[in-house]
View (tube, rainbow, N blue to C red):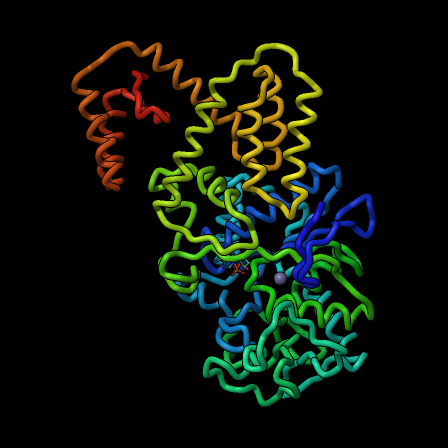
Length: 472
Ligand code: AMP
Ligand code: ZN
């Protein structure tokens, strides 16, 4: 499999250090709010990467952190802790907030068929690991204590690795955006490994450390958790493109200084989902969530398809119109699959050729839109339906679009429709009113009509051909 490596700026043949298991690390969510669908684009593409590796025959061990402490509001080691801010907003404790939004995150993942990583580690569970790394970095002369905090000394590095060309000003995170310069820092790129003195004395979670009672910086958590579960080497590190700097840059600095050798071989960065209005951000207040998509009547699979239709290294623009187009595509695709009949023996040679095309799409830097096209190639192939169904089931391990499950639901609806020969002008009128309400995005009215019909003992079945009903 060829993958683009952001560290080398090249597509490279993927080769794990140990052929028996791919070590894959994913930066997890900061659990102070719901994940927005931009965050989830990143997790969908990482999920596809993991499944593509497994599909190619690799065994994968995947670890994800949950950031429940230490992610400050600014990259510049300043501002309030995001968790504390969330807790205050909702009048809850930090731990309550963390648990609530961790559960919400995995519920969203489940709705989007994102597999849960093998290991999920809250940042607050590995304090000893961070203290150990920070102590070693101080012993090695790579870190220093100043003004009560421990800082990583970037001048000790041969190269402060950054993934892209940033200008001097960009790199000086400590002094941009009107953020007050931290005068404890020896170099402007230095970053905090352990805080005992932040401007926010009311930091909720604190631990004893050799440098005083305090809490870890954000970057150290991913190094600590990765080193704990994988030891000193890592095959792939994933995250959204905004994590490349300073987060991943600082992870490399501290991990390699601690280990004394190269740490991670491949860096996989997913580009952003933006709205017409620009960047999508959790801190902006109103934002797009999976629940909102569901409320508006979209199947989460439609959003997953929308993401798979574009390449992970391109920015993707979200609009309702684009999502509607994806819904039409999804429904048409499912209707075509629903028309297939299990009609006998699978033609193994044809299946092999179809699978090869799918594998080639994945091998070309995870070309998911081509992988989706491979499903259409199956539908068009000159072979029997049983072979097509087998190929689609096989591809759906990676695509995870519920292709067969949704097709089955369509078939069931068609059957129910055939059975429901009755016609009732009153019910038909209500169904038509609901369809109109949905069209004009009056979802409250659409829900009200559904409830009214339910009270009359009528169940509505939404099918690609429109809403049908049956008595229950
Ligand atoms: P956070 O919960 O803020 O720590 O972010 C979780 C993940 O979402 C990280 O990998 C981010 O890089 C990624 N991310 C943040 N914003 C976006 C976006 N607009 N589109 C795609 N990924 C994003
Ligand atoms: Zn991370």
